[in-house]
Image (tube, rainbow, N blue to C red; front, top):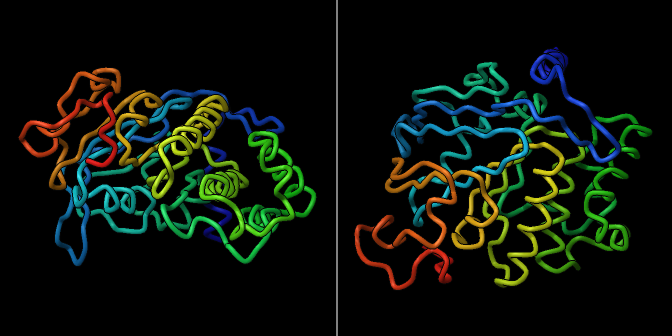
Length: 277
């Protein structure tokens, strides 16, 4: 009953959505609105007073030093953690008290930093796991759509995910999350453990494809320089609180990240290769 209600709500959330063979969604203003969110563990706040918006076709970037609360914030958005304060709205509907599964059914896709693929399964089987609730014909069409979005996966469908390169595995993880056709895709540090060149390629291919389709992207990333080039807006978290919020262009090559994150001078500016704040 809950799943039926969530799917009905998703139709109401996106009344003007237009889906093609690759699952493209028409732009429709603000998709995700997080307002003054406080969240933590055992009712002890870790993040406080966080507000953020994600629009269709745009990528919102969240950055900050290690321990800033980025992972806690993501869990609050997905519903893995209950809110201690504030609200989360998806297309104007308050989902603050919805459990994680219901938010997923309503259009939130999540690609975690680790455990983003099933290494013992083939790429085809990983994609099928992303749509395990779908009818066979619909699942086939959805997988065809995501392969159309990421054509490099076509030649990899019969290979085990555990045998792929780090960049290929990450694209499989993103593709699997796309099979249910979410409107919002959360990418949690997708370039972790990748080389700088592969990291840039993954962000180019994944973020660009999602935004082109009209989806919203919430990007959590430690490679600040490359991420800023691909984002529309940026939120900086420090010690669980927002330090800066605004257009990503304002920080590209102009801000001393050491001063922004730690209150001291940094060795290099954002555009000069500061990749792990």
